[in-house]
Image 1: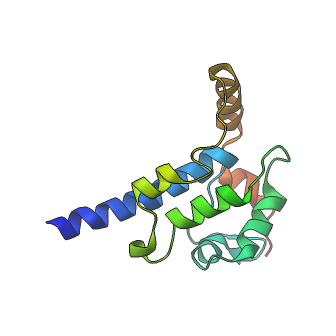
Image 2 (image 1 turned 90 degrees about the vertical axis):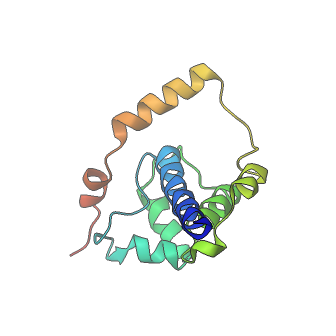
Length: 130
């Protein structure tokens, strides 16, 4: 029973990483079986390729920054090998997690903007290469 619970926790960490990326950037890190700029972002993400970040830097809103702390946390949550993913306590101890936070009114404005602009397929379809 513990093995199954552990696997579910590892999958949950992966899912939380995907949601974290979406909340930070207003877009999903990848869409399964969809290429962006000729690249499979899911494969690049799992390979921990710097090209994953290069492509997202080209697609992102200029106000969004993927600093090294954010990249480190995200990569730790979505490791290809589930056993290598960060644990909840490691996430809570992470620099990015413990960084500055927005005031309630700032967060409300930011999230409203991100919700309005959240559409990975629409944003990336014009960037796809044949």
